[in-house]
Image (cartoon, rainbow, N blue to C red; front, side, top):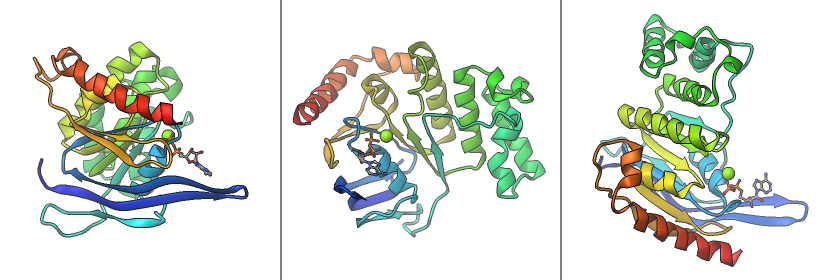
Length: 259
Ligand code: ADP
Ligand code: MG
């Protein structure tokens, strides 16, 4: 993990409505390295989802530039996978048909790709559920299916917008551990929005704290935990965990006070 894969410079964005202008992002600049796991935290409504939509190029920034680099420094547009709070699995398709939907739409459902998807389903414990409908699966399994659907398209960058927040706390702990293990193993670059500070500290290599709207980068916190093993539970037990958590808490408390 060394070269940057993504560079944002001076990103600015405002929403325009009949009642006026709502500035959402103001002068956002940062880089993400290849293979890095970056977390974004910030007060509710500060502009986090807007920023992710701009990175996904679903929205055009009003100012600033966004560029994606190859390892050799050349510019390209990478394959981007997007995972949201709701899994958006289609009930009228089986789990297998759901996870292969993107490949089917892109006319890439070749025997090799089917083999790859089956391997992902096996690796992540969903193979025996592949003929089931989404409603027959638990919330955690559904979220895993949504991740496999995203990974099936072999994205280079994964964008995760509060993907665990619809799950109850217990499920959330296991599912976030599961999903992070899968993403780490795949070596993909990931950007995770979360409002759960413990989740951010235990998962991320680095955390960006955004200010209240219009969002700017208020703090950048690289995370280095002394780990007994690579589980998220070990991360939560690391000696440094508490001080990172407190630092984040204080950064955000300032922002909430400013609202
Ligand atoms: P976050 O994801 O951090 O909660 P968002 O990026 O969704 O925040 O939104 C940032 C701000 O922009 C919010 O305060 C919201 O009121 C405003 N906003 C979001 N979407 C729209 C829209 N389509 N039209 C007008 N304002 C919007
Ligand atoms: Mg949001």
